[in-house]
Length: 272
Image 1 (cartoon, one colour):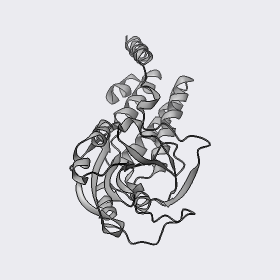
Image 2 (spheres, helix red, strand yellow):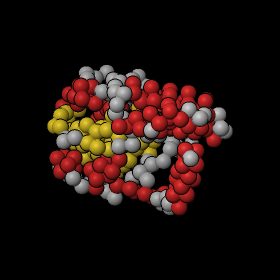
Image 3 (cartoon, one colour):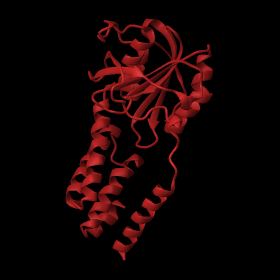
Image 4 (cartoon, one colour):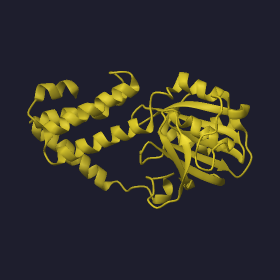
């Protein structure tokens, strides 16, 4: 009965996923890094990972944009940061607490009350400490009066120095970082957002482990899939600094399913 129930659960999940229509392309702020798209080096992030920026679309925001870029660091194919320069002036506090950008952020991340701070050159800014709703990893939002206008940005906390340099125009043409002192915003991020702890490579490794575990499961190598998902669990525990965080549910579920597939029902029950 246990195997039948699990088979029905998997089958129903597949039917539900197949029956759901995906959002149209314009509904996404970005997908993955486009091949062949021109990019420029923008220095290194807090984890010393090399970063590049490339132009991006921002249709999902529904805001008048003068310029939009995505930052890719550490070989991760997902954006480590998104930087949008608004075409019209605005109030920092209002943008950080309400409006379309904040609504867009809240759909993906759970954020605390914005904190007043400054970035390089004592430029006023509002910093949001957030966590990703899908897996609990640290994230941040930033609203700042940049060199070319009001900027709304979000990304991994480790990318904050890169965002600061881009917003204030302190990135050299070849991408080297200008020699500047650590800003108040970076210090705040280090203490509240763990900017020194999680980089793009950490997120990329977690993504790769989940994909590898899925592939092993589909080829019915359930023992191998279990091992890989346990590595993913360990990686997520290291990021969250907790072994009881609700955001560990995804790797735990996958471990339990692959234990059940090996007829190790008591172990699977404990994880379920």
